[in-house]
Image (cartoon, rainbow over all chains, first blue to last red):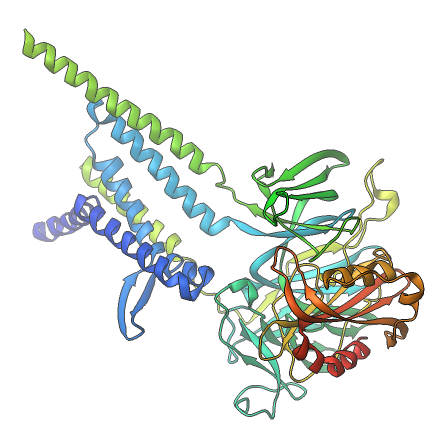
Length: 393
Length: 210
């Protein structure tokens, strides 16, 4: 019994010793370096988005050398998780707590804040774009990569209801999986199945499509994913259930929406990029663009906007390297158009919009790490001076 | 004992972290209630605070105008055209041809967006051609699009897009359809030979808009 108890007590200690060891730190950092190197090389052919998902957003991944030799590696998500545990166990809990190591402790704390910020950014940040013509206003921005299905009530005037099925609830559905979506606000149900991340609409009797589903003679034919994830055109099959029967439709991001009529109301269903609502509205008053003389090199891109919130308006300029930050949202001047616009033409401005709850964490972490290093160097310097004085006596 | 408790606490944190880092397990529910509901369309005027700017939704690419009959909601896609990814301010974009440089897209703008003549000349300017006067614009060929008479334009020249180098020997086919409160633009550009081969399909596509 005593031996069992000792064994039960020993195992957590052994695990703790492993997770707090320098050796583990070195191994994890080497693996992170390797992932970063391999991902950087792979990005040149696979594209940024695909590489980020595969190398830095995964738990386990396989890197192929020369497309033939597989190497199984832990993904950066797993490595960063283990590194955080290693930092907490070794750098904060196990470390001897005395004034000589105060600077190191503070530095480790700063690094931990940086890693927590990374975790929050990965899981909770959203980003997209908002594009406005001069004179237009919007209170939402559009995701670059995420999808949603919008079911919009079609009305002649006034406001309309719009029900949203976020992509997280259907982008993993294979042709064998289906989920029924319902709401009291809807006079019909929507059953989704067979999501394709990138596809075209094809005729069911075309060569090579015989083993796919067919709706009204159409199938969603999957095509290779585009390295730039933003350029993928998704599709999904939907079954509309009403009191008088069932109908099947294909929802394709580049196609026209499906119109469903039930209980004397018409609803439009379309698959589109995810929209995020803002707690304020942005109006583009004027867009200014200048190039360096006799070149197409941009000199100034600036948007004069009005931010309206709770009836209060504020004029703001958004320019290259001068973003707008408000309530956790950041607006960057990203691009403009239309192509070939001349003097007097109505221009549109496109903003990159980011909502990141850990937006300032890198700044806080940098300050704390700087303080920690300063304390550590100061302590080391004072100890050196003290030792020199003792040696002289 | 304290050390053991500390270690146990650390390992518990580690386990919780790994669960979080690993992400949530897939949800295998077969039925879900739609919980996210929004209200779209401009607020009713009497509910707006004083001095609130008018809110208008940009039409066209977002196709989020539930309070209007959509100007364009369907079309017939020619067999050889491929749908391209979503772009800002475009309702839909297609590519065609072996060179991958020929594209056709539809844009819908609210209001009159400067009018037909201004946009015809803007396209001519993009192709390095001189502008037309009002009489010449009125004399351009017409197509029937969305039940209206739409202006058809065919211009050859050096195409200059935003930030791009000039591409010589290009062809631009365009249709501008003025509706009551919206303008529909359909534009095809590409190397002259390739774009010219698509002319018949382009016209059929424009006439199929509904």
